[in-house]
Image (cartoon, rainbow, N blue to C red):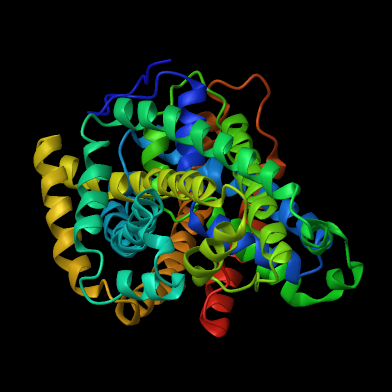
Length: 441
């Protein structure tokens, strides 16, 4: 269904395309290296239950709110905040506040592109065999040194931005390929891993519940942070995707499907990574080195491991590009519409900004602090501003009407009560605890 609004980049053609694009934004590398570890270290199935609770809450309330304000405004981050605050005759304040989550999208995209370049370089290494000619730690060190992944960095930024050149149509078409292939590849790898001797210990680590963890505050904190950031509720990127959603689509429904498929992707990732680590006695909680050092070692020891490595890192490249699309699109839309530029000119400007900054922070000691600042301070604060704006500033009648467009049943008052008195306070908690603990997502 075509978008009824006059967004200059058009709209998604149907619900499937929209959901796949939204899932593509949500499914990222953190699903692969962070979720499995946190699931196992926080009580297995006990953590999963808490995580599913927060996924349900955040997708139904937080994600749907961002889709709704995007579809209502017909424009991206800046315009959405401006229109929402205009109901209080404070449009300029809204416009100013909108720059914060937009800066978060740009900042995380710059850093994420660098990490994505490491993934692309590793994928090429699996194809050429270079990854297996040296220790994986040495290969990783080469990639993460100063200008160590420059050509791959350029390819990632330019390649991702090229997929955005036609706006909604190209985003939809690329994700209709990227996301199904990602799921198929990971499922096939998970099946292969299941036959490894010792894999059963990994499944016990993941899914045998230790109910005592439900009484531990950090189980809830980690599950909440993981769910929040996994859904890409940043007060920016999902707003833009909302502008591409047709008026006849049920926002609550597509938000739920996005949460469901994002969770499936995280669980499938866990079924690949953790049993493989246990089968070969590797540390499952290594963070980013898990992907670039531990996993190559595991795959090298497996029968047909090099072939599996090619598919594994190819699927991670797909996940990285689909996430980058959303981050870049939020900024591209604002550049295009705020400054009255053509789509191509906006994309070129975005590529230049991203590369000029990113190239000089490619080294791991530089990109790490960059990502910490963006992910601990800017993005959670931007998400908090968004949550407050939608549920306390935006006119409730307009909000309700947008949610009910394309929906058979009316929106219950419970939705707005949960938004005001549960979702917004939790956004505050995530922001504060993120600063205290140095990040919880």
